[in-house]
Image (cartoon, rainbow, N blue to C red):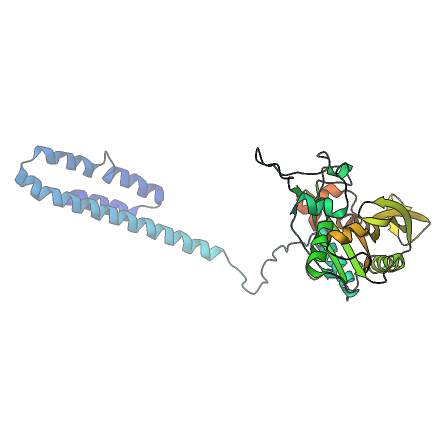
Length: 356
């Protein structure tokens, strides 16, 4: 065993690389290595001889394994030293820049719209996205036969068999927040209700989930003139130029009278420019709050009156920032978001200017 030890310790010391180390390991302590063959001879020995030779063979095996491990570490250290001699790093160079996230146009426009209405005294109100049939339809004077209540337009939740209660719905507008706010706060009131809404529709200008912001103002002497002023002030601040509006009579169950609102614009090379030209673009619905809606919110219509309006946040973003397809808002395409998104220090604000 002394000859075996001297042989392998010498070979290990002279090994030039890790491949040679692995070959020596197989020759010495592998399953068919010389030490393994010696251990198989223990079965032919007497018990007295095994008590002497067994510990010696185990000690030899451990010594060779230790030598192999030490030589392997030495070779790795030598390779690292050689590598460090040829590589260098200038620690005075600036670090690599990390890509910053972008603020989504919907988030940005929501903040812009909220800031403008807040400047006019409107508070922000929020409510649940899964609403009862009563808050979403009945309280807003929408009759049972109205097309908006059809399953082809509205997402209804499932009821267990035998449960005859009206199903909940994914809210089709943020108007239920107005009812909840009237119940909670009463009149006078001046609020906007931003949030997600859901309708069964999907094309270039419609998606099953989109964003809407609705406004409500109640007092004792409000009129359509106040509504027109509020909307024109909003559009002028939002688009950064004076914007004229045009009201067209229209029917909505929750307002009386109701009006579609158009804004002044012109079409140029396939894009729209707001505040210029002789064309008109429909952007929202509005009107004076219907007495039945006031009653549903617990407010006396003989004492209070007011106006309401609803605007699509996604559509405002498309108009202001030239985004052609509504579906791209929800595709999670990072290239699109980097193009249309906002850096944290490059956001239009009310005090810094809302145009970019």
